[in-house]
Amino acid sequence: MNTLSVTLEFPKLIVSSGHMDIREDVNQRIHNIINNLTIIDSQIDQAMDGWRLKRLPRIDRDILRLAYADINFLNTPVAVACDEAVNLANKYSDMQGRKFINGVLRRLQTVKLQ
Image 1 (tube, rainbow, N blue to C red):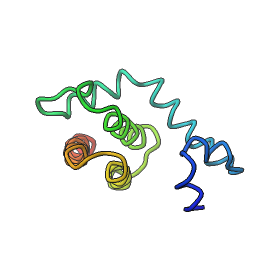
Image 2 (image 1 turned 90 degrees about the vertical axis):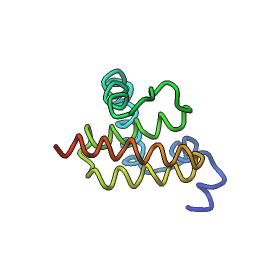
Image 3 (image 1 turned 135 degrees about the vertical axis):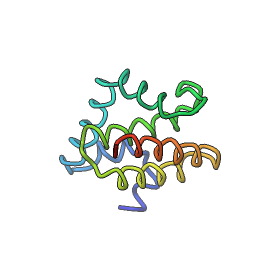
Image 4 (image 1 turned 30 degrees about the vertical axis):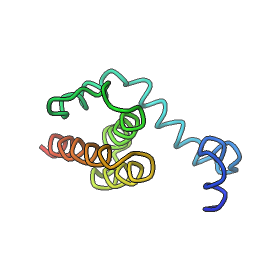
């Protein structure tokens, strides 16, 4: 499976996967983000000190949106969602993006825990 995931892009892997639970999970995340995009972006913007979400590279925005949706709509533990987001950033973003994502998620985590 690991070799296959390296050779196929993720959407192709999901389509070719026979695991309906994986497909449903991905679809649920996508629907949560699309249906709540304004709220998600607003909350992330508030956690960004001196920056706006729209100024970030698309991959960094999407990673932050996924983490937010996991925490707020799927009740994923904050630490787990943040760890997964940082892992995605390590794979798909640059050093500056990783640090920025980590910082924003820490601020979001602080707000969520209060």
